[in-house]
Length: 256
Image (cartoon, rainbow, N blue to C red; front, side):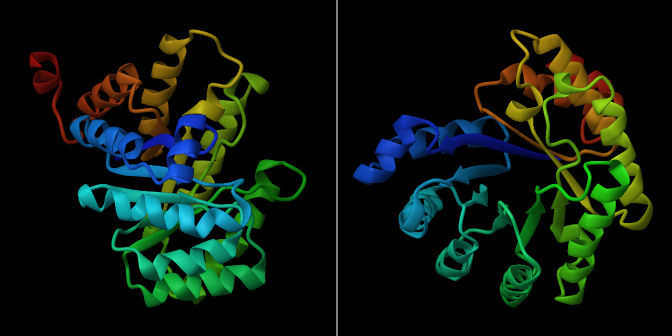
């Protein structure tokens, strides 16, 4: 299971200022907490910095070299940012293009392939008429293109629920249908959820979200992105693992 911190983002003025002033302390503070609490990845979001995206990503990545065990998830607006930054940094992880055309896909997949099996790609954009079948068909085109360029399914991640849970009555069922459609053909593919988006519109519904996390993990979601400060989410996911006897047993869970 991948636990991904979403705290380092320019949507938070503290980090936007830290990047502008080249102040590493707020970044290192999150990295320390993430490391202590068992997170595997740090999501770095510089979408909105325009021509400064590359410099910002490079500064953050170099700062995070102090925590080599933590991998990165990179979010930028311009796909050229990935082509510029990836060869310059020591860490590995996942890139999350905002949108990706066929021509851009070839460039990105080729670069990832050249870097070896150290980087993956996260597909988050939507396709077609917003039905499950059109979403699946649109995503399959990118998956096949990635395979053609040497990027195997175990290095590919997709977002099966990219809308608030509360926005439609059958969102969980829709998500399960998406997972089932891909797992049948690509059992090694990974599935990612951005929890702030899933929880949007809910107020103080930690019980609902924690049950959702356990159910999502049960049906195959294996990458969860949320704040390092959500300790209840961490406990819910570990409880789900214990129930499934995955990495930890129920006996071990309750004895802590």
